[in-house]
Image (cartoon, rainbow, N blue to C red; front, side, top):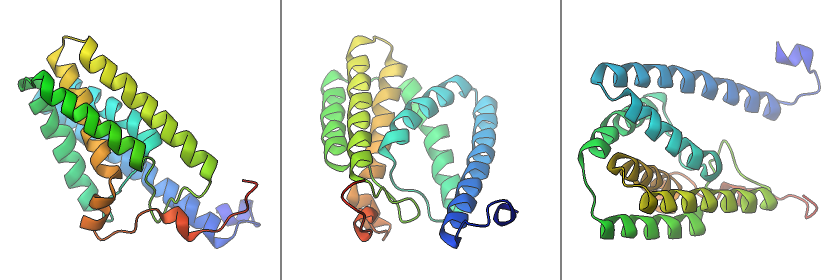
Length: 192
């Protein structure tokens, strides 16, 4: 149908559209199921807060995606149903919050944004923009960790940074045998 409306689109462009539609469908389905499960478990608000905090970082930091739909379901369910329980019940000492903040900030400075084979970040200016945005968001999170006295919010901010930090780290790509810095496989003109 898209080919009929836009006959000039090549297979790469059609694949990009197909990938985007599949990702959108899976994301919405997964979100509904996870939020419903969190409601049944009595952690709906906590799951929503963690999802929002994580997705702000994910929006500019990008990072690893599961290669299979079932892997995404399992990892997302564990992350957004189990982590909120810990955020709700644990009290992290200040030295641990400082350590998490420092490690995550170094990770974001060194590795954000991290691309995937299906979504390489080929434009240098965009990669720089995304890096700056990720570091700024993380800086706000770190400031909030030490301004707020709300233990759940502190833990959620730290958890969101840890999760995103793990997903952009090249070692996680190695662990899952996936290529890293996929943009290096593309040659683009210097004007972009």
